[in-house]
Length: 103
Image (cartoon, rainbow, N blue to C red; front, side, top):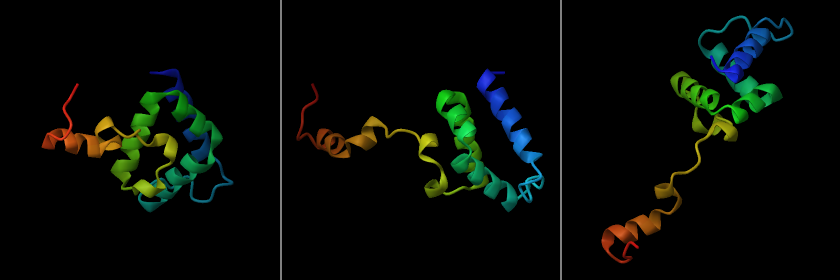
């Protein structure tokens, strides 16, 4: 297992056992969604792990999707960069219509 994934797992286990967080030990249903949103936005260590480990960021994006977290609540550091087709849709459309010739 990758080192940053192990560190993330250990950090999550520590957060789940933190008695200062009410409901942290109840990780089912809406409580798990709220807990995940909270740690993704406010825990600096988790943010550093996700930024330094692309595999962890992919897993967290998938987890957010599986739990039904809306795109507006997913942190920017987990979002995918726009694909080239999305970055320049007018060029792709112009190329399809023949107004611009490909090089």
